[in-house]
Image (cartoon, rainbow, N blue to C red; front, top):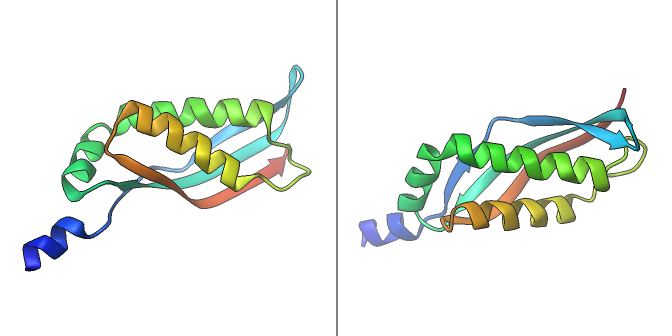
Length: 111
């Protein structure tokens, strides 16, 4: 019974915080910072995700850069639901062990 509970318990894998520029036209108007945690489909997937961290981080960085270019502004609230959805889609495509991306912190700043 205890092993069944351990197998069905949620498994989480944190990524180091990311900070990318917010681009408006040809200039940077601010920065977008996020801290995310990956919810894995099971503990075995969490172990695999931990081992694949450099690739997953690169995918998260590229997705966040694109979001910062297209949708972010230092003067408006960040659409966290949209960002989480885009990150989830990109990271699931990278590794099927990702169930969902959870945003722990999101901030947009000027300068």
